Image (cartoon, rainbow, N blue to C red):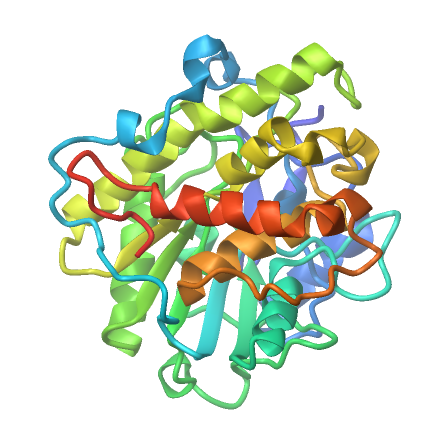
Length: 381
């Protein structure tokens, strides 16, 4: 893996020291991202930067796994987090969601050698279809980058989708005029070898840590839209640290899922706790997307889905089935209700999901209901 490459991410150019670029990414992708950053113009969503497709093979402590890696959120949460959000799911938390996403390609994966017909490799695509089925409203805009780049505010409306209505045109109006209800943000999936309050390695002139960069984002969006709800999208880890090659062996895949539910998950709990401690009056919630998918792929009939129907590389970018499952967790967490029972799962998603859809929804709902801190307060509602 070449660490001397230069990654163009959102509004900045970031030297890849400690942030490994995916060598499979094309020059045209980097040029597209650089053009967007230079012009500040909204695009139709075709500027996924190379850094958003990253993996990391260093920092071996991030990929240590073992039987203890299956600890639950309640077991690993700190006991003094009195500021976790609470709620009463059952009735929708809202029915008209306008979301801005500070994201990367584990939320919206545009550049692939095997593209699907539409935006099935994106969470907003599935969010919209689920919301539409439930007769709710959903609109979304977003941009690519990692937290240090997202902290270079204001953001731009870089993404566009086939069916998802845009929530904002950054060329025509300021963020504050877009009436956002919700922000979704995520950290890199290869940085968990250090604590969330420790500075990033590599080119980091502002000495950002994941927590400090996120705090800047939280403060800024709350100034623009007081009372906005902010969700942390807990993604899934880099697979390169546990697998010598792609595809992984079954033993490596088992270790990967254990790590996702164990040490990787623990990092995200500490990340949310630190944000709540820094901004106790902010509405910062978390969606345990990666660990919930790992449970579905190990403890339900979805364990029978072949790897090639789930992932396309060791980053690991998903295929439509993974993004659909991520969309289910995100939809149910942000709307606060189970996914529609009559939703017709498209054939592009592996048929085991459709065959066991009710069980999948039930498992996700149980995960969300049980996602509490040490005092029993919900981390997601």
